[in-house]
Image 1 (cartoon, helix red, strand yellow):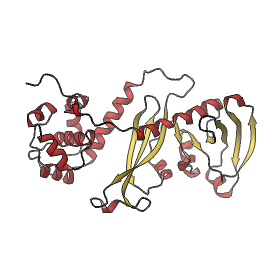
Image 2 (cartoon, one colour):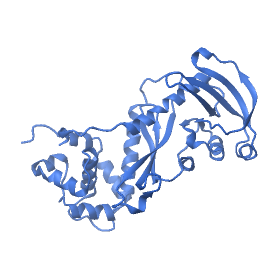
Image 3 (cartoon, one colour):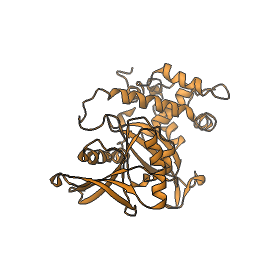
Length: 312
């Protein structure tokens, strides 16, 4: 007799059956389910992700190693490699996108009342991407010339309040980061913190026109003219706080408004960072701290879960 709820069941308990059913109704299957429900498929894929299974066969063999526990893990249908492969091939992947969006919204609500730095904006996001390696034998369509293997790119917008994902997208590995600015949801008054891979003045101007604020690292080749300069406390690491206008023909046409240029020295890493933003009201030190918080999305990509035998 099962003495207590399994860890895997506790993890999936956060997703209410009624919520999952509403997602299924939005993306119905072309044929009635036979043996393996959408929820069973979801549980099997979650199990494979959490326990680092390497194939569908690996998932099924591992689950069937303890068949008496399947019911306690939440499975109700018939598990087989054929059933799981058929479901992955023919069912709508947007079902899992809807489930992910639902869970991300719930996670964000959990941190709404958490105390945060009063000097930093409450609504701020860090945007970055990471390459996901794939098997070239299994996914020849995903060939990535840079690494000479198959790969995908995960684009992630991380909320800096709680460090939880707020939006994500998957593209081919060679998709430029700056083009993702065409697709991210822009909220008026929100801050978007990005590395220099997102420095595209046409897209940044559209973001500013939507009343969003950005903080992006500058590139060395950008030409500009200083129109105003404000005093800074160099003991804090700040080197300059300027108002600039872009001067090259293309950049001036792409972004005709003034920009704020903040240069700060990072003593820990011994590097000087030059930041551009369309926010003129916050202190320069807060702008620098916002960019420092962008490191949270880097940590999010680097964190790797340890395989825990207690998962079952």
